[in-house]
Structures are given as structure tokens and as C-alpha cells.
Length: 191
Ligand SMILES: [Fe+2]
Ligand SMILES: [Fe+2]
Image (cartoon, rainbow, N blue to C red):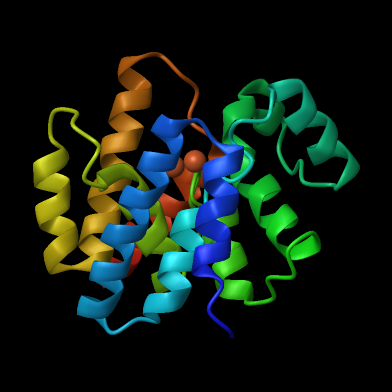
């Protein structure tokens, strides 16, 4: 795979607001560092990270239209809560418009919002780095960063636990994929 990071950084800078661009760069930096530490493909991690929110600035109406057209709606909850589908739309655009073929990168981008059962290391890395990049500053983020730094799976589980409890706290429905992702990872870690 030739190095396309520069191309995607510029693309993302054009497509996203400055704040979202900064967030994406933060995810790229953290995912790159952690990929190196955990012996994962650093370039794949950086590419998935910089592009993970590529479609996030599209208006919801347009996202829903594209998701329908491209058959990316898999659950009724995808429509009830449309901010969850930008991962799949971003992955679709990366593949169809920009020729990204690495399926692990595409999966990591597609599943960064909800997770899914049987996540690969790269999927867990992007899911967790999205929530813990240096620009995030909510209560408890340091604890999540620390866990993630020592163990990718434990850190990802902690991020999922944080997300589940946050959603309950604000009375938001939890997407079934997130519940499945959490149960799957918890089972594996208890084995
Ligand atoms: Fe996102
Ligand atoms: Fe993000």
C-alpha cells in the first residue's frame, strides 16, 4: 500500500470542521502510537484513524439517503439515532470513491461508532482511540487512557463500559451492536 496519509489528511481537512479535523488528527496520533506499542500495522492504524469521521459533517438527511441507497442500514436503531451511521458511510466512501481495499481498515472505520462482536485489534484500536485521543477531556478519560495503554482489550472493554453507562445516564437507547460487542469482549476476557 503506497503512503496515502498526506492525501487523506488534506481530504479530511477539507471535509470536516476545524474541530473535527483536530479530533481526527488526535485519533491518528494516538492510534499510531498505540499500534506501534502493540505491534500492529502503524500505517493501517493511522489511515483508519484520520479517515474514521470522513462522512460525519454531512447533514443527517444526506447520510440517511446515502445509507439507504448503499444498503448500510442494518438495524431499526440505525435510523432512530442517525449519528451512528457515519462510520459505515465513511468506510463505503473510502472503498468506492478512494479505492481503499484493506478490509481491516474499512471495518475499523465502519465500526468505530458502535463496535461489533469479534472486533479485530485494529477495530478495537480505532474504537478506543476515538474516545481517548488527546483532545478528549471528559471525566474519567485518563482512567480509560491508562487502561488502554496497558492492554488493548481491557482498554476497549473499559471504553465500552463507559459508553454504556453514559448512554444510560442520558436516557439514550443502547444500540444492539454495542451490547453484543460488549458481551463478546467481556466473555473473551473472562475465559
Ligand atoms: Fe465518529
Ligand atoms: Fe471520531
